[in-house]
Image (cartoon, rainbow, N blue to C red; front, side, top):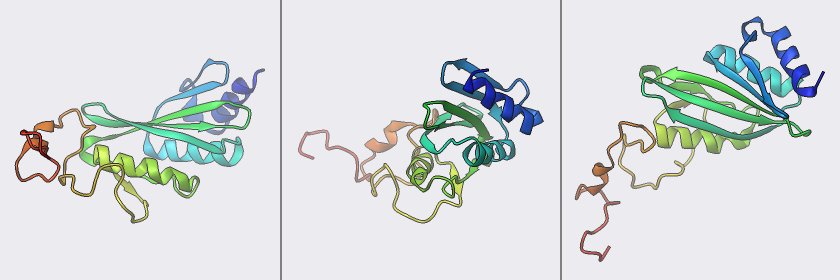
Length: 166
């Protein structure tokens, strides 16, 4: 049995709901299908605490029209990467912070708040990232329904001068 198959077996043994939701797509790569937030948090914690997934590579967030989807990419020392998927409905756009496991992940969570407008519960106060301080409130550039024309409004301090002097 490969290391990837062993990890899959341990996950499925611990969490019955993972049956047929974990795929080994190739050497050193495991993916979960979408998990509820509760399922995701349990599996995430188990992978970190018990399966030696000690590195958070990144968090990818995407607007899926009706939901926001997130993929958390975890890695082990042996190069195995486990990508866990979760989603939340747009009308309940709140996820929980994973900062207690990976304090460095806070930067990815700030991106999620700034670029998608998803609230991250448990995210400590801090400066916004990556958008500048003068960015218009309520404007989330990674949402599919975002209209960049809002930046062309004269009252917006980020708008560029059309005559080229600003």
